Image (cartoon, rainbow, N blue to C red):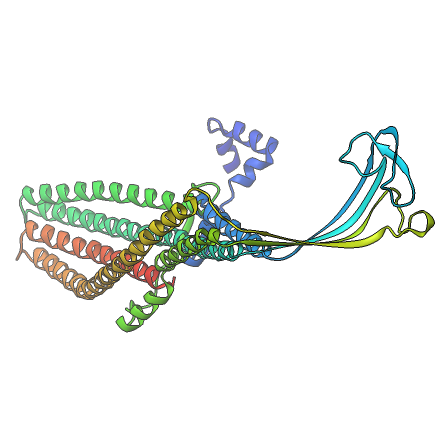
Length: 448
């Protein structure tokens, strides 16, 4: 009988037929478990999805490869050279052959009509320039590593702010929902007392205005919570509309000691390491520029054959297999002061890098003081607001009891409701402010 009544509903049969023909429709209607994302998991996912961090990571790896290449340039290189050369003869005889006379090649630069080369060559260049280039590449790699850490911490700070913003907006939405329930209950109370001719209609109007205001507040709070969730979901999921929950912090807020904060900031700050690596890189560039004043020594050792036949021994026992050693010393004499100008350029860049280093140190000190003061103030205000919430709740409870007994006005109840809601939202904002300040402090000290 019940199924017959359902079948008579408009569109019910079409929905049943569509569901049977499309099993996916049935699967999609099943409720799925909402995933709870921890802060660590959010940071891990954001690092995989953020393109700016991926670019910084690639730059750091590329700089590490450049450092490896610069160091290997100071080591000897080995090449196994093989060549076969045929030159048209000119009809004459060449008396300079290994054994007797041979047909002379048309091109005078070639040694014989047929020439075979199979040689292993070891080359090495000794100079200050290679050492300076290796130092510069190492400094660039250190700077790229520091820049990667800066990018990572910037991403971490963004994720942390969004993560706690989601919790903050969700708490406010819940507070406004409770406030709407409180306003609705008070409206019902005033209507009942008006029907009992205990209060005037003005009390009902005041309660209804408060109720309507709470409805608007709840709508705005819901919208803000949705925006915050979408902004964070962009960094976490392929589909930003994926539902998720965040973990609520159960640990009591604590602030690290100032001495420990100063120690960590002086050793684990990436901006400071990046500026220091920039100074080291410019000093290496200056050394490389000055290396142009000094000579370069190139050494070569070759072992193999270079003969008219591809064999260890030629006709009549002539030996084709052997070695040769060469050394070249290039001494710079005159280049129209180009080296001097390059040294001057590198020294100018080095001086700018030193100024940037001192500026970074000053900004670090100021940012550290600001973040620590912000976290300390937010922590103190959170403690005070905890007491304010309890006081405001007790005031609202007593005011409602007095109103029920006819000893207070509706305006006093509305004021008590406003005070309680404001204390709750201020406390939520204070917690979010403390979490943001603590995250900024942890960024500067390298503990997050």
